[in-house]
Length: 78
Image 1 (cartoon, one colour):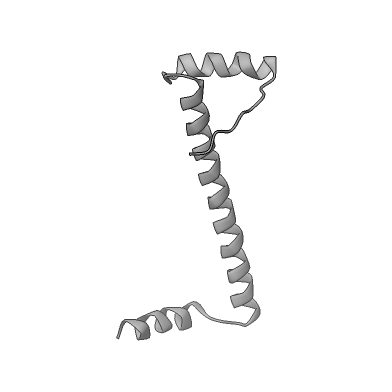
Image 2: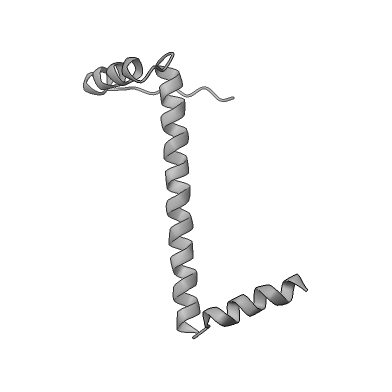
């Protein structure tokens, strides 16, 4: 595991301290790991939805119907 050093402003430090104690984190590091993991998941979801929208636009542009897609999936099952 790589070690990363982060500088946090005094204002942010106060907020961090209150959140860590209020929500039962063992320490600041545990909170930062959890917050980072949650943010990465949020950004991955955002990418998924952006790509999904691009695919939907492409399908609509080429006038691909939902029934055609479903039939295509059914054919791959056979």
